[in-house]
Image (cartoon, rainbow over all chains, first blue to last red; front, side, top):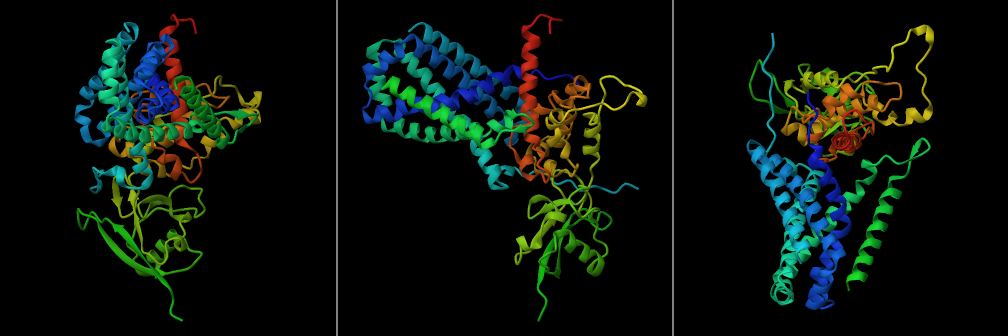
Length: 111
Length: 128
Length: 248
């Protein structure tokens, strides 16, 4: 039996699991709780996003989190009975992660 | 003579069978919120690229809206659950040993929690 | 004093009588030190000799008395009646396997997978007995010992929804046993085994639900074996992609 090429997608899935677990809650507190509570205003957040390190960070967070999420979504959909469409589900899932990553790179570079 | 075997089909709601499977499905569903929030970050980045005025509009009109805050809180709950399950899995994925014996799994999990809290606090201090 | 009793609802499948299974109730004496297997033996000896099930050692070693006890895969020799009394206990054959008769499942698929994964020692270099044993240090033993505790009871297969949804999946015990030999310092068969373990029907089917490790009566932790194999396999895949051929 041939060895699978699954590691191509499993590596970003695994990296994204750790990256999103470690960083996403704090970022959500900023864009959700802190914004609602008025701890940060539009100008401050705008300046923060403009910083090159923030842009690099956001690119990594978006891209890795997408690869993590679509991998799980793919398995959820298949295991909930959509097995006949496993092929198209994979294409759509990883395809959107790739598109999302490219967009994130473009947005982060052209700020 | 070979008799007919009885095959029991897998029920469609197999993930409801016990509490462990329900929690597993909850963990997997967290992926929809991870993906959703990533798309939100993507939009925020795009709006920032359109200049400060466009970003200000997005900030006041969308980010400060009740709906956004409501979705943020729900997504935060799911993502925190995703984070906890990820850190709890550390001893399963990593085989860390001192000599012949594996280290106490609780120690490995606690180390991840500490790292998580420190990183989160640093991010919040830097940003706010 | 009237004797206490407990009810067992037992899955009956008698293919010569009906294509459909049914549940049959038996009242058996309740004893605090009895396990479900004792109750089944009581039924077989005193109430209904037609009941069929597998058992042998009665002490959690042979791995043949695994059944669903109230929906949970258990060794019936280790499932005490007192943990359920006075509620009735439902006893069914292990899920995810075809039923041959009553509580007896067809385990051909599992035996085939054990063979496929080459769950035996493949020495790096065969040597004659006169040259002595293949030596191993306690530290080398410790790396795989946990995975060697498997008694092939198949509770993990009954607990695994992935196996239920995709019977081609190699499954928890076979992968853990494959890893048991891969991690053995005396073994040289990792390459052959990895072709099966790292195929699409091996570790990559697993979604890390973790039920296999939870129900394992021997604390083998197949989920750990599988997740670690995923990490290792992924490292090897990227290395062979990034490094030029031959430069390992």
